[in-house]
Length: 93
Image (cartoon, rainbow, N blue to C red):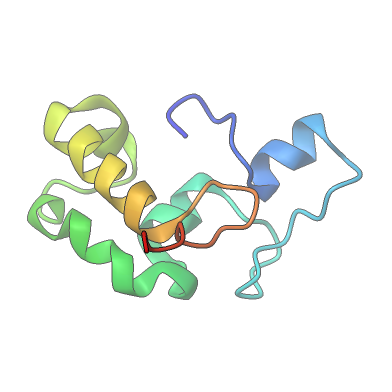
C-alpha cells in the first residue's frame, strides 16, 4: 500500500491493464486515496483513522508518520483492503 503496489485499480491501470480498474463501490478508478479516505465499502473500518483526522489532509500522513502507519496496519488487517478479494480475513475458529 505504501509503495502503491497493491490489489487496486490504480496499480492495475499502470501494470496489469487486463484487470478491472473500477472500485466495487462504483467509483470509476479505485485509488489508494479513495480506499483510505472515502470508499463506502470500508466505512466501518475508517474509524482506525479517527485520531488522525485533524492531520489527515491526504494520505501522506498515513504513509509517512509512525501513528499513521500503525493506523494503516490496523485498517488493512480489519478490512482486507488491498488484498485480491478486498474482504476481511476469515475469523479464526
